[in-house]
Length: 49
Image 1 (tube, rainbow, N blue to C red):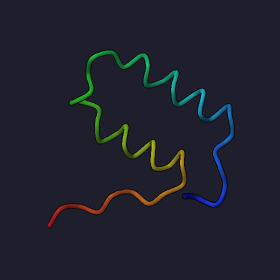
Image 2: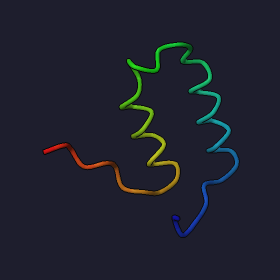
Image 3: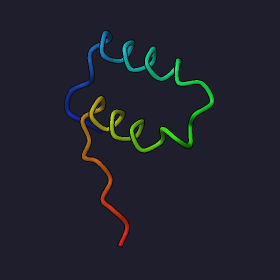
Image 4: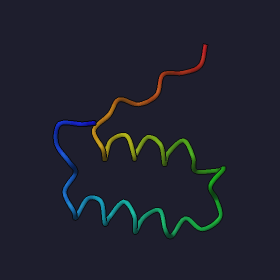
């Protein structure tokens, strides 16, 4: 668990942004994961070997 929690405004903005993405989950999954990692303060996943 990250040391500090994201602020409410950042969480709301993240949710609003991704609610509008509609049914494009497969097209947007990499960007979503990257932004989610940034939001919760964890490192991005490592590439597969």
